[in-house]
Image (cartoon, rainbow, N blue to C red; front, side, top):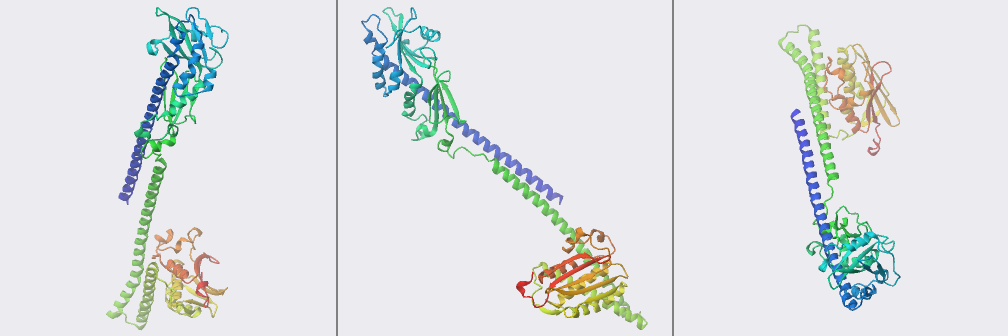
Length: 539
């Protein structure tokens, strides 16, 4: 038993360890998959920032390409020269936006005195100090530092933030005298960046296939201070997020790319691994349940083995007592040691009494074995007259009652009939009478009563013993069950007598129970259907 318990505990511990390892493996697998998705987001963000730089360079080139020719020969050309180029530049980069054309402000700023001229409007106050400082120190720009980009905060020329595209006009000596530029409202650039986003895939074709960017990614572009330039159809809420910032000479725009959660199935073979925790918890609970059930079953088997040992011990003792009596008196008769007729008559009575007791024990054991093999004692029903069976039973039990100085009192209504086998009715009542004589006191009165009521026959055996406690009145009908008070007492038993009574009563459509007697003691009751009750109505 101890070895089995240790084995079960080790098995449960191994199950828990394997569950933990499986959970750790699943978590590692998921972390790897999430890392891959974050790498894809970084690739897409880097690719879009590269594409944005290339397209901004192209746009600026197209915007300023013809400006030097237009202002050549003019003393101080105004900012309208850039306005003339705007439409052609947008057309050459494949984008037309009336909103962008109408909202763009073109300016000319003097490096010498910081004066500013704006196209189509009267001169305005000097540029905001922050933007003037940016233009005064252009920093690293493309194409020989001739043009570049800056992000102008709100308040430079209005309330909205701008992307400043500027060109440095150099004099004959190579010095900057004027800066020509265009203020592109960030909100008006949304269509331009959206075209670049939808132009072609941001992820390698081997990963994304032919899926469009919108089905795989969320993209947003914003200014350095959080000004919105572009937001994809849905705001990026995925955990697989990457962010990159364009260089300062490209306006320090921030590009943010997130992998759509529902795109994981397409980007990763097998999709994003689901959490195995609920399944593992269910398996662990199942394993614990099996372990507990196994321990319970082992305990039950151990208890059953103990009950069987008690049964074998009790049966052996019950068989040995009558056999010892029979052998002793048989030897006395065989050896001629009983000289008087009275002694020989007494010996014969003992032998007959113990033989009947032994026969009763054997019949009980056989009946119990047949019942547990699925026997059907209700086969071959006959009409049994109860008072005749009781009369025969009293004759058989008279010697046993005399040996205990007990008296038998019978009160059975005449004419009661049941549908059963005569031998089985005899055995049920014999078991109840035997229990009453064994467990009751000497010189007691045992009462056997029988009455008919509502198509049923009720038979009861009442003794004057210690009675049956209420909490044990159900379990005494189970096989091998004996009360704790009787286990170490002088009366030995097999624990199957009452079980045989209950099984037979159920097979014949009846029932058995125990209740308090009128005085002291217990009353065992068997209720069976009367003869003539159809088989289908027996319950």
